[in-house]
Image (cartoon, rainbow over all chains, first blue to last red; front, side, top):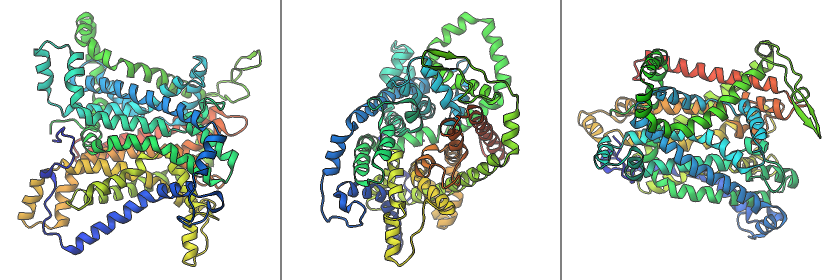
Length: 290
Length: 336
């Protein structure tokens, strides 16, 4: 049973391998280093490229000359900051609303027996199978008839349908690991079910919430298909759509593209740093043991 | 562990739905008032999700199925040109679209590559994720740092990573080819040759997918009590035996869930293909989802009927897969 403590490496869980030979240790470190380099390198390479002046952009020299001109040009010549703000708004709203409604859903499914519960759980799983392609045109029509096309709200609602089913599953699994006695003590003290959920259970579910927030944010921040289909006009685009434009406009100019990529990756990296401590605990309780 | 895995509950839900529903309705009809007063808070808590899913998924699904039975395209759907409103003029064509898709070669060849793509991505990702999770679960210096770096690809927005890879794959100036040139090897047309393009998109998707797999499996590994390993070691079990008889069974519920999820996600993995190759060169890397998207957004006239047909077929295939997967596991005596 996974504990709810934020530190994932409970010492007792780690198999003792005290007798590992030095050779094996070296082999393990080499494997990890190679894997880490592969994991980090593509991103690092983009970062390095973004700091190179245009004439060196496509060379393999690392630090011949560094410059911030790619960044300044980017901010000066394109509505990058507008796109960025749009994306931040959409992803932020998706995260806040997504976490809240997947937490309530997860809690209800974890604690109560109610008619429709099984159907709901089944629906949440099936929802994951829906291909973008079958939904995108009808959702486009709905949004257009509700006047939500080109509005951040339209994208937020759409992203919620992508993020929430998985998040609700994870939260359900996470709540399952919190003992029911805590709920009961809440009822004894006269709290309503909502009060118990809000004041007692939610504070205990921080790792689960961190993972859910991370997942919702990343989903909304990096989504491309809906964003490019629903949003038009320079001032409404999110980063995904904006970057597409950018590719057409600048063609093979790798420098500005790299700078844009770095700036786009920053908020995601911040959310990641905040959440990563909880990722293993949260996932193991949620997605995994459900 | 008294906790249901998602899969367990889903199976229960699936298995009992028919039975459960009739029983449930009977009860509810008998005492609607009491049912409401007992359950209103539970319903209130799931209401937002239910409403959003019903409106944004339920309606589009019905609509998609409907469109797949018509010959709707850009020229005959309801639309407005300036002030003129033109009503829909498409016609009901029954199952013709399905017959066309299933007898024509385009759907089947795309499906073939989609299967290759899904199976290779999921199996390689799972193998790498399992290996890395096992290493990270040991006591090893710098474990936290390694873990942070290995999860990184997950934290980077998909279109940024895909851009990074396009940059590396670039035939004339990409770093990969420069390194090869340094070794005296001719440039590889990573994204411009059908076979290499397939290898490249799979490699990129594996790179993107490993962190999720690793984190999930690491969580699973950490829930296996250390005493089991100690006991096995005392009994003289070697590393392989410990892995085979403790780690593998301990991970089975995690594995079944992540493999199911990751298969579904990979099958529908739109952004990687769309942004890396746009399905090209030719149609070589087009998977079902990207092709369906192409029908409704990139061909002229935009073919909504065909697109919906492919979408519905994707959904049917995935549901069949989930059902078969479940049954096979049950036959093998897995708990769910």
